[in-house]
Length: 261
Image (cartoon, rainbow, N blue to C red; front, side):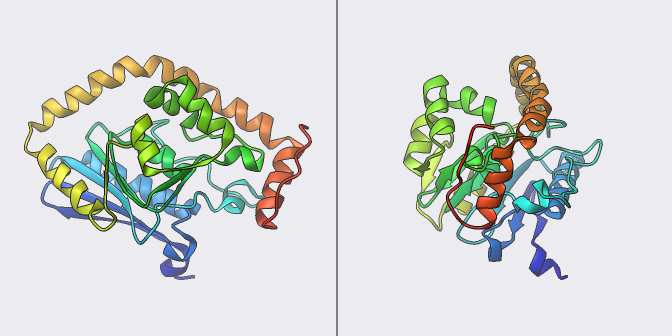
């Protein structure tokens, strides 16, 4: 099967800037295990290249992502168990890049799209962006960092409002609660991200990395405790009947009938 049919993640460079782009437009940029591996490899290459100072993480086309290609991650033939040992984790749950990362979002930005954007340092949104953390509609819970990064960005009430309702909200709401730092007209979002990246590159790279590292030190203790809960959440929920019903309802494109079991 060709890359065009399975999706791909590419990395190009613009001076000191790495542009890492997700492209699976036929499936609204849904992630496959192979795409996750490619993304991890590019983030690692960026992190280890002294000539690259800032990354812009973006998606091709009208949408950021509809989320994971669920059967390939949670079905009987699922094969992805996280990034290869030693590589950067796109969710920032394991190894993180020490350099600045600017995420760009537009259109549908669901589930892992939000979580990976929140693992970046700055988020630029097109005014078309639509966000939703809908895992609990499928019998699972967010396992890519939403359970603690929503709290860090928005506070308890705003975090629980969107995590418990599993609602869809727009770019202005994302700006209000702090998920994104700028909202610009669609079509200008990539230009604005690159403009910001060039402004960041005008600063001393070692000082920027030291600043990010110091800020991470403040958050790390609480984050590590939250990350340690993810395998427990996964084991509990994936063994439930509601999880089976959630995935089946997704594949059959119908409303799930949960029983609390």
